[in-house]
Length: 141
Image (cartoon, rainbow, N blue to C red; front, side, top):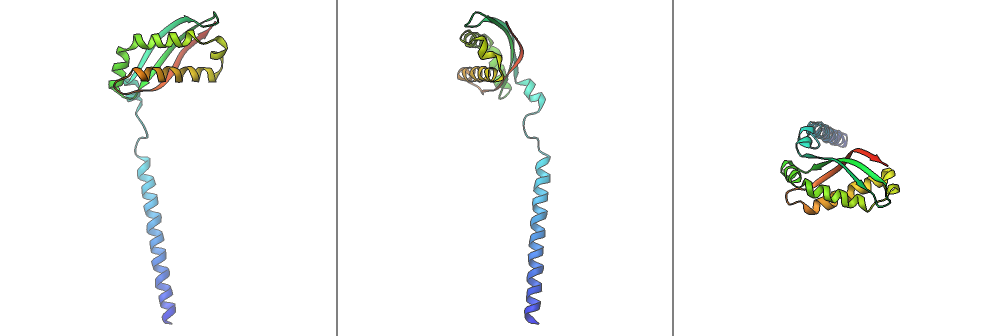
């Protein structure tokens, strides 16, 4: 009889602890959903810089016309990037002048180009960094 009572109390305590654990997990997952995961679109646009259309020759004699949008880590980095637009254009032209038409045709070629621009511009940056380079316009002939 005494063992039966002890077993019942232990089961009640175990069920109570399990319920409390489930409630804590549910509350934590619900509270986590309310927080934004990254910068808002307004913050992204505020730190983005447009690189106007550049037309240049490629290494194999063909030419490319390309426009870029470069995202910086914050507004200060975006302001610095805007001031360095002539350096960014120079980097883009130099990078393109060493590429051939075949290298730019596929998706992987464009990703490689974007990563090269990102890393080279990041070497220039003093405040913040470039987080992403987007190709907004692209014509290859």
